[in-house]
Length: 328
Ligand code: ATP
Image 1 (cartoon, rainbow, N blue to C red):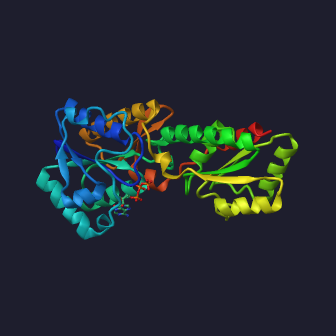
Image 2: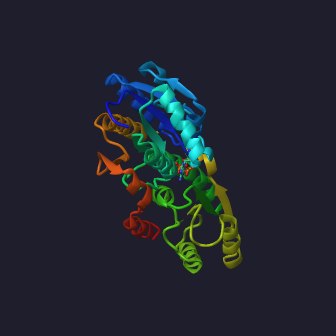
Image 3: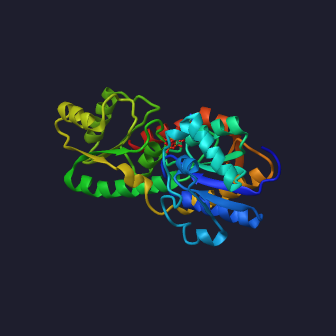
């Protein structure tokens, strides 16, 4: 496909994240600003296959900058993973006159966009939207900052009960492949230990650290555990293991779960969403495709989608040291 962009389709795909609505609003209003039509595609790629489209003008996104979730709904579409599904999607886009796409989602959604571009030459720009912050090419994904604040607030509350009963709490947070939430929220909430997928602390060191903390006079403790930590035990097995080996500890488990994805986006996520939406639309207008708009050193920059998908978003190892020092 080539020529001037006239009608942009926008969709949200994969897991929802706070700030997705602010990004939709930004895409819609940037289109209006540049006199380009904007079409909302409902339920991600599945809505593309089913032609679930709605025209969006600047007033259609009033009062959503502060809302969690996504007004366009999100979905995971198995059908889009088949050439037949993608053909249906392409036919629908053509019928509606849509000539380019802004995909707000995670690396799976970007992979879908890349495959679609390869088959049909359809211009695609991605905006990283996932609370896990596990995307290469941006220091922050949409929803990550909000999720950190949500987790810290929850752990603050857990600490109240932990200290009243002299208990040890294991708090499980989201992050199957990446420990960004656990590491940053753990430091922010003053956790004794933080277990993440990137680092194998080892069971012995965990016990040692807990013993040391008891001996140093701490009567209650919080251990933050990412879903995908490397200990080889789930959070409940870990509780049993610690209670067997350190009977002086009364351990409780709290799995924060989906509440981490909800809630009003933080100011940071709203501003980020607004900036990335502008960049995505203006990049399409400039004839660019197969890029992700992201934030690096507080500048909005483009990273090739392929790199964003293949690259790994590393944790800041200095934070592990900071966390160790803080638990002295
Ligand atoms: P999250 O990080 O929240 O999981 P995600 O974007 O990575 O978000 P996925 O479920 O992995 O979420 O992908 C979203 C959708 O992208 C899939 O349901 C599918 O429709 C599409 N998709 C993913 N991988 C491919 C692929 N290889 N080919 C075509 N489409 C794909």
